[in-house]
View (cartoon, rainbow, N blue to C red):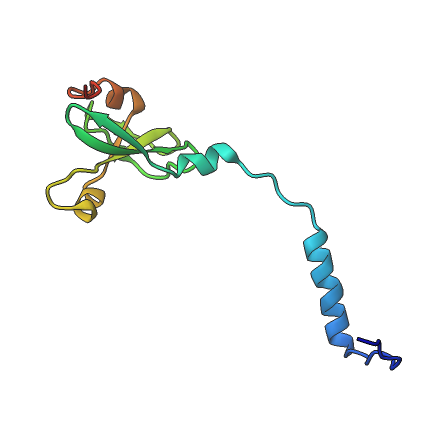
Length: 119
């Protein structure tokens, strides 16, 4: 297809400025991704003699409230890394299990009764 010899039409001043700003926005350096933080939001699935569990790690940066650990009965204060745990094979369904999730110290979760892997 032949090219046109007609000059391009002039864009309004406001759109050329917006185009320049848009190019600058995309040319800005990309912030580095914190892989550890992004992995922390994904639950891991664990099988133990007491059932199937979803376990999600909460980083110290994301721990914002007080929680009571069901393993030791102690308070988990804000700023302490811990686990959020819910049962995958709940009798009342997944939604009920997620609503009944609990916050555990990592050590309390590993040493709880029934934490032995299924065979």
